[in-house]
Image 1 (cartoon, rainbow, N blue to C red):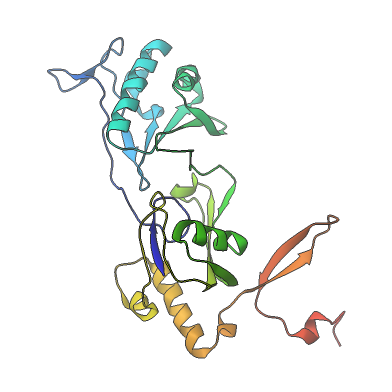
Image 2 (cartoon, rainbow, N blue to C red):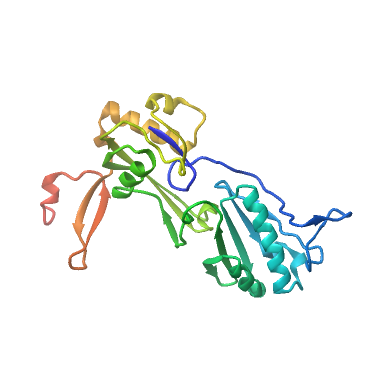
Amino acid sequence: MWWVRRTRYWFSTLLYAGGARLRPGRRTASGGLETPGSCGAELQGELDRFGGVSVHLSRHHTLHGLDAAAFRRLLQAAIQQWRSEGRIAAWLHIPILQSHFIAPAASLGFCFHHAKPHSSTLTLWLGEGPSRLPGYATHQVGVAADTAVREVFEETGVKSEFRSLLSIRQQHRSPGAFGMSDMYLVCRLQPRSFTINFCQQECLKCEWIDLENLARTKHTTPITSRVARLLLYGLREGFDKIDLSMEELPAVYTGLFYKLYHRELPESYKAATGAD
């Protein structure tokens, strides 16, 4: 089975790409724009692959000397434009020396997402329903075990059972993870139902695809192609050759447990207390 997603988990598609110059207000004869009190200032944003727009104030030299009230008018016009264009979220990156722009942005609905020593990032959800923007962390982890089962059911309507972890991809300084390390986990699930009833807010298309066709197609990402070939190998030679099995073990904290993923360990070694 394969599905195309709007949000960021595993196997997502590029919905939007490139950049956009956002110029709210009236165009002047010189090609600039005017908004009341902006002195010709303009906001330039970059579209991300999920349909959001990012604005880095450090790149807007025309904002120097702009007061908070004028910036609010400029930002408000930009928000109206983003909504008319169907953008789902706005990211506002504010240098510490321009922190006086945080209050007017907050008055328009922006909230803090994260901060670094010399800048802060604010977000505004523009899509329908509650915000689906990812939280911030030092590492971002994809989906595994119970989470994978739940996500598949919520987004495709297909019930499944976790079988194993197939692969882990780690990428440092990932642009999609706010410049932090990104971990991407791929799981093998056993379907318990086959009727597709996908969530139209999360997916554009969802269908069952023959695994051999998926392994051969050139219209996919390298990681998808590699995992498809890994699954073919498991089907033909045995999943014990590719699976990273999961076992729940007691944590050092009383009453808590954790999940450990590794290649299958023989029972004789599980019970052993030391080397013979």
